[in-house]
Length: 303
Image (tube, rainbow, N blue to C red; front, top):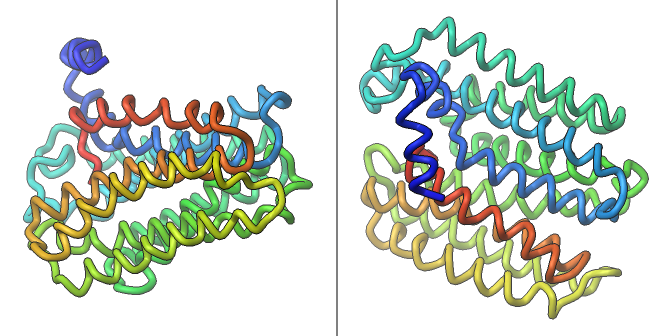
């Protein structure tokens, strides 16, 4: 898989590679996992398959557009901190990138509109939240993590929106990715210049809340503890050591690795939720996205 992706990437024009770098393909795969988890939670596993395609296309546009505008808003800062990024390195113009971001967000909203009115509302909410994060709240110690968490929580609910009637019964599940992504965003504060142990400790506490919440769902109807357990253990083993290391030694390279692990491990989080409300096989289906995301992360930046 990795060799195939490398061969294909070398044949692409530089500006197309720049566009892919801006869109962060490995992260988009984790957004697909959100949709699959929400979709399975909604009970729409064997129905509305066309809706699933539209929702996957929607999250591709919404996430891709959101991170593209992140680079637009950080263009001046990246000249200092990350001059190798596509915009400061002059591999692509900021006008082209802005157009790309608009097209992606528009595609995401239009695709969601094909599913339901609720899907459209959620897609618009994600687009607005992403732009607010990129332009205003990113560097705020409290609003930034909360804002990014809301984007992911809404993305999970976008998958649930395949069956709008289930939304009122499953909306609270969005709190789990909200807390998790708030933790990832918190620990990412020091990925350029180094961080503080206190910040890492906060992220670990938030991650602990996520792990407890995933088990506590066993008290809700239709949630199977035994199906969840293997995915839960894998999530804990994957994330905790990297985040603990970043807490006791908050150097930029260690923090970047911790953030990368945290972002990609969203697939494990989604697999845990999906298996709990359905079965182990569907959890494994979501988990199958993990090697794809890891392969893409070797080629394109995650943070």
